[in-house]
Length: 288
Image 1: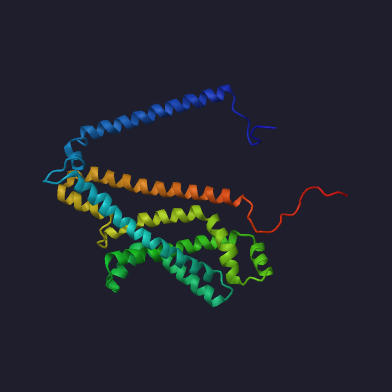
Image 2: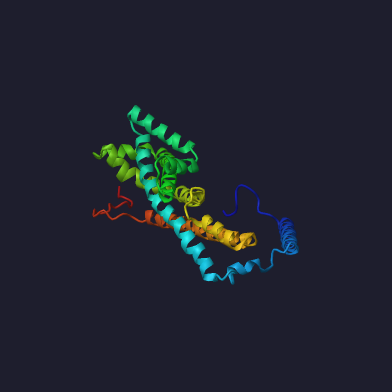
């Protein structure tokens, strides 16, 4: 039996109305887009200000502009994110394990640390590291991103551990594994696979939060954009802003697609039988 059991399939009249509605919506959307473009053209948006990307003034080359944005700015952004992400993940594993400890004092301390780190703004952590400890802007950005995202990822891992069947831990104990071995060998690998989309989404947030380094003087992508429009003038803000927006979207969408790809690979790999070196028992019908 085919078909959706929740509702009846739409008939010819309903499908015709859906097509008409889609066409009307598309026409309205195109009309709004044309109106916005005309309004921007009337305000001189499409004048020679875009030359800053192809033939910039003041004796500069387009290569210098693009290099300052994509190589220097984006490079600094990725550098902070690449250093902070693994540090946050390691700290998150520690906090998640302590958060699920059977010792009340240890569990209470871990909960307190997580709640404090979650409650503090990332920028405040960066400023504290910069002003209180006299660290460099790069170190301040990395510390702020690490501490905040470690708390968030620790809660993601804790939720994943809570979602696992209790029989997983009991099975580990039954075969002689300690609690730490059960977490490391049985539970955490499943949690990472289960919560992978949430983890990648949080790392996308980490990458975007690196833009807060702009305030503490870190030469990341937004800082590079500001340096350029301060040099070329306020008319260059829109072209530079759109370039930076496209760069952020490209990087973040790439990370999101990577998460989907990894999730599919892990799911397909999990469906294959695991080679254990033991003979597979015959599960066919037995003769009575």
